[in-house]
Length: 418
Image 1 (cartoon, rainbow, N blue to C red):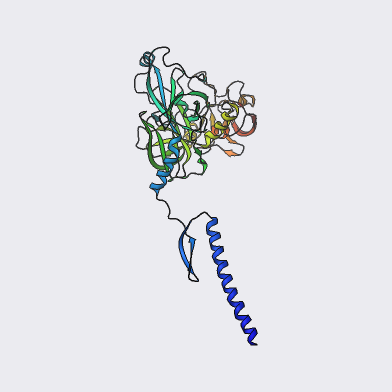
Image 2: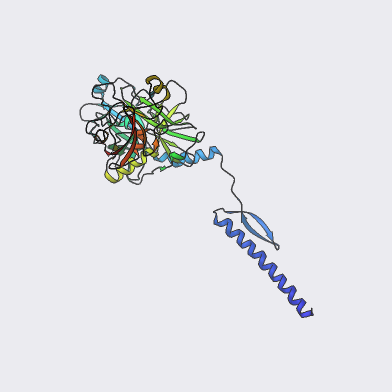
């Protein structure tokens, strides 16, 4: 190799090393910047200093909870229930807290239409005598123009007036837009703009042991109370009742040990991402820290329906039933230990199959056992009412049924819940 060739070789090698080093630095900075981290440490290359990146330290659970509360609290509202003093004293007595307890499930999950309260307009507080606050609940803002989601039982009294107080202390008369005929939630509306709306999570993806936060108007006098706990159970079925004789069957409820107190009804149950995964609904007075929330996925279809049609549109099968369990099967000598036993209620008007309903038109009768719907087995984890609620009016479903000892397949076109 000549002298000129050796010089050319060494110059080329030096240039290659310099270019390669610079390219590596540029690539490293590009990759770390592209995933969103700020440069936080330095490296020395060729005697010069260049900033690169590193992963930030993970947040503690306390920091996550503090951040989510700061995010969600502006969306949580207090709902005050006001009534005429004379009417209230005569009919109810003091200290109304809607659904402040629950009873073990002996009720029947009904798909039978019941008379719904008339939708109320804000009333004049001075009309019809003096008003006083007789109870309260919680809700949360779902649209910037003032739509609010809460429990149906919080706003079920047609003689009461409802006032919403937002996190900044402003109060608004509330109008009931819609009440769900199947589940325990309702949609209110206040005349406001630019409000902070919550973000919905996915309640189908939650897990036992996951940390959650409940926010609500505890005891109807401590707004925006924050409690923390975990999801302690999933898929619970309970019948909740209040001291006015009202009751609601909650299917597939989320159980939590986050403290839920009277007045928390209708408030959000939130995950560590600040997403609402449930609507706080009932609490056990017999146990300690046993509360229940309706999964938010059950409300999403209803909310979308109100936004689109101004009302909650629900599909309707038209049967009254009780879930078949092993104990029920053994006691009544049934041939299966799962399914929905079509059964009448406690009064003569509580028909097992509603005359003229889709189920009636399809030939279902009392004591039939619905085993499956569209191939899904009916059991404690897959309630008939929940599966039907996820359909649309006009959908045709296929039922596998045991009728008079024989198994058969029945097609039913769902109606609209009136």
